[in-house]
Amino acid sequence: MSPCDKYHAKGRKPYKLILQLLKIVIVTAQLVLFGLSNQVVVTFKEENTMTFKHLFLKDYDESSDNSFSVYTQSDVYDHMFYAVEQYLALAETTVGRYAYVYGENSSALSLCQQYYKKGSIDPANDTFNIDPHIITNCVGVDPLAVPQAPLTSSYRNFTLKFHKLIKVTIEFKLKAINIQTIIYNEIPDCYTFHIKMVLDNKAHSGKVKIRLENQAVIKECKDPSVSGHAENYTRLAFDVAVALVCMLSLLLCGRSIMRGVTLQKEYVQFFRETLGRKVCSADRMEFINGWYILLIISDIFTITGSIIKIGIESKNMSSYDLCGILLGTSTLLVWVGVIRYLTFFQKYNILIVTLRAAFPNVIRFCCCVAVIYLGYCFCGWIVLGPYHVKHQTQEAIHITDLHAFIAECTDTPTSGKFRGLETSPCSFFCCCDSG
Image 1 (cartoon, rainbow, N blue to C red):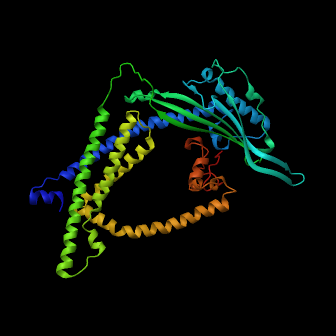
Image 2: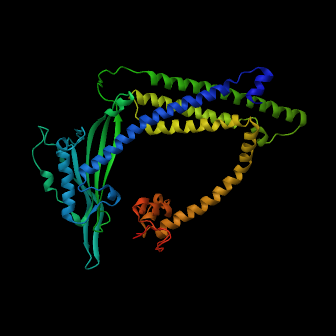
């Protein structure tokens, strides 16, 4: 029976329906609020990563991010020393506000090279002698602004063993504060960026690849003070209200499932004692409402995500990704759960019943398509990978030829470089000069 039928027959008010509609509104609002806050966090990290690349990578160009390389020994030294010097002069060069962090070895920056214990390569005689054990040699560098740091440029005497060099790493940490969260009436977060610059020579092909990695750790700031800012418990109260509503929904759905299980037992007992027949599993599952199980999973995710969100806003936790996964998944399940109430309308019910009947065939079709697609992916990776950059990794294989074509056509439609109707066709797809 639908909630309307129950109301007309027994006078029972549709509490669960009203609760689910209310839950859709508040859970979606909670996800939007968290999404705005999370966007600020992600943007701050990405912008700082781009800042570090422009600061510490010599002659960095965003268009050549994936192919940033050097080819001579002097260029390797230049890029290595450039990063160290930029780090030492950070306070005078950068627009942002950063602070140095000293590591366990009391040095703020660690300059290391990894090389084989023994490496002798003679292409002229086609001989080599290599000991694969890796040796790591490091030197510490401290900012000159620190009084106890020796005023020396010992890192300039750091000699690289190119004939057996594997890679050079420059690691250091920087602290920063994300004050733009004040716009959203939140206390700013304190960040510690673990920056690692790698000059990769493991291929020994004459090409040294350079990349910069950035890992951010968020923690509570010490003694935060914002003038004119009072404690705002509105979001905290809202998160608690969402958790309580989901808890009530969890109890109601759990009660309905328990009633279904009880009715199932009575049904099985009646068939066994009266008719002497055994009820199959498919008939037993008719008493278990799958929509309620879906809502229970959604409620559990929402309650857990709300607890994590409260911890994030109180600066006791920093699990933004986990919270986003839980709240996003729960919101998806809540909206999907509304389909159950659409089945009470005849026209929607016909559509949903059709989808339910066609679902097994759709899954079979998807399995067949997935087999063909995976075959293409592995074939492209193995056969074409060494010869085309699009197929060198499994992630890049999924880029279609249409995407590649659109990326190559950088001219705007008003540039006059697209083929018109009166021009001779130089290609069916390509952009050409009409002049």
